[in-house]
Image 1 (cartoon, rainbow, N blue to C red):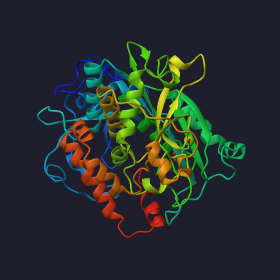
Image 2 (spheres, rainbow, N blue to C red):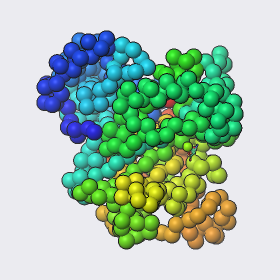
Image 3 (tube, helix red, strand yellow):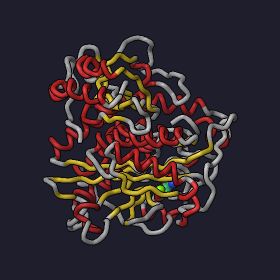
Image 4 (cartoon, protein in one colour):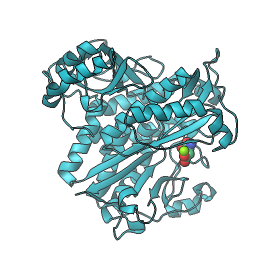
Length: 467
Ligand code: GLU
Ligand code: MG
């Protein structure tokens, strides 16, 4: 769990009290350096590192890094907004000691997510982690609601980097097949071992549908910790793979055709320790607030897509009938609806019931994605938005009249279309604040321009190894 405290120059009090003992412990465990990680607007995790002996200085005064990365594209070119993208200025990166963990698959290294503040000690308005913390804090203060969240991770495992950047599956065999499990037995066992050492409670690990694809799901945490964890799990998946001579892709679409890599969000809203998605008077045990929360997300899905599916390659994944959830609809355990109501098994519902948001991939900055989805849901709660009829089956089978009658719309089919919806969405823009909202718009338009004129195969290739 995270403490939900913003860093300040001189250090967060709790972190200062424990940093000396932590440094000694890390040193005794032969940890020589700390990876300081954050995710940029384009969804790329970027890092600085410091020697372990500098951890106390980093916790107290931060580590410098340019704000220019807020408007980096996935190919490292830079766009600008009114206030971002210039070579001027510097920010301080503050590691969050609550989340610091020695890396099992990178001996000598520990890892921590960072918050970014200005040299004057103000919150950096472009800091996605600070944004999510603010959304979660506001939800607690204004609504008395806390959240649990988890990010599912799908990825494709390939043979060592091919010279031409092609993806060559590292294992053969059918979807969900035992052949794949035995084929990558050593790699996946090492991955489970690394997760266990790093205190990541893995729920499941299985071979998925696409060639070489696997999926891991982990236990739910508060949203900031869940976003941190998704970054850490990916760092771990990649590091373990490299130790086995393998290469991994988290890209939304490793190939132009076929099933992509999702990054589905699981979310549940809680009040006073009670799960609002279970035991209520609404459908499938949802309380009125859980229904309104679901309706709030549903209403804003087209605009949310600009945040949850932020890459041109995202729209190669977001196709009907591939379980990516490309229609504005909800249903109980319906894998073709954008929102899947998960009740859990009888006897466990008060604990397990949650909402799965499917049109999300791992190019999404998890802090921005969770923060925007929660903000949309809370807007539904504030407005007591009614939740329409559920659907069953694949909405792709509906003709236009039936779809219209059910309020089922296709989500944006391209990044520019998603940006159009996002630009006029006052709720999301207000939640993000102008600096982040403009960064999202500029980076998405920059990505779209970068692939202008490329065919699908080239788009997939352009982002295959970016995330
Ligand atoms: N790979 C699918 C996607 O792109 C999801 C499969 C599943 O439901 O786990 O979202
Ligand atoms: Mg899956």
